[in-house]
Image (cartoon, rainbow, N blue to C red; front, side):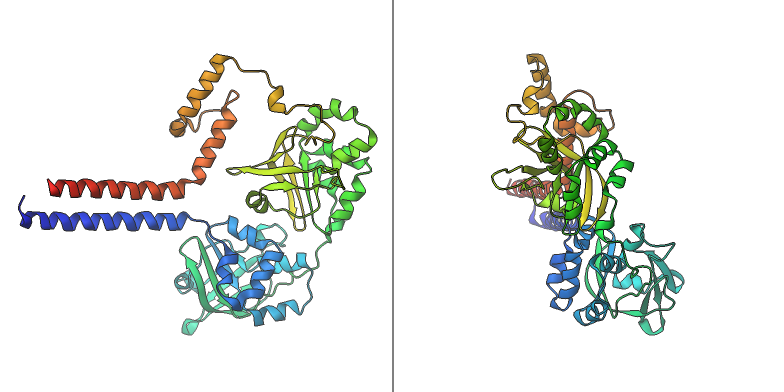
Length: 421
């Protein structure tokens, strides 16, 4: 092939390669995780705002969401809010009003249809706001100014200052001049110790565990721990029913220890549990009595592993920092009480060679799981296949980038080889 003919082909190929690289990296950037704490850490002027997002655990909730806008307040503006001496729970309500569950970049602010719009905030999403009190009014004013105001507070009391950081259609951090003021958000909230722990569990599928706790000497310890931070793992009614025979065989003091084993004396949001895997002490931990278990996430699933059995979190009953209750699939069995019991997986009937072979085939065929994604799960391997698929889904962003780059490299190698020939 003549050099004159090669030139257009080389130019076209290089253009195609650059286009593929751009689209692949852009997709990876869009699908990547964001971290509001790291974003604001690059801007010292928002250190106080950043600190209280962490203290109230709003940062964890922000990091779990996409298509979100943070109305950030600088240190001077935060001082005026802190002068009100709000409790942490009330301050969380006020700050959650500054987190909009929609994306607004600087450009979009000046393109608002009809010049004004109402946007739902995270405070509205909690269900704590009365009516539409958790909505924020955004108005595009004359001269390029944009005003903000809580829906339950007449007028616009804060204004757009600048864009701090934007990841289009994922997260936008905008500075506003003053804190948003809302009578509903600033209303005093019930102290955590006033929360009816037994009532909450009874109404949401944990009646049996609540009944055990209600008549136990373990209940005062749970109540006393709420203010300082408490995470409760509540077995489902089905799990408690299946465990009732073992529970009856325990002494009174052992029953107390078992119930305390389901409480952790610190607040742990779901995001914190996913990112802070490891050994966790419980309310039953004392001196040489470890009574601990290991938190281990498997994709999006969070497992609690004792030396006897493994339970997983199947739902959240309440998450109101510093207090959170999760529903779990099994009663946690501490090794201190069940030393002679083998792990549950060892107690299961051994599979036949044929079944084991079938299991191996399933795992080998895992890459084609998408074809049966909608088929009902059955058999002992259904959960394993589901976990494999979830883990694969979590890695889609990275794998997509790697596959795209590998494709580009192979394509380029073949192209160069063709030129040499």
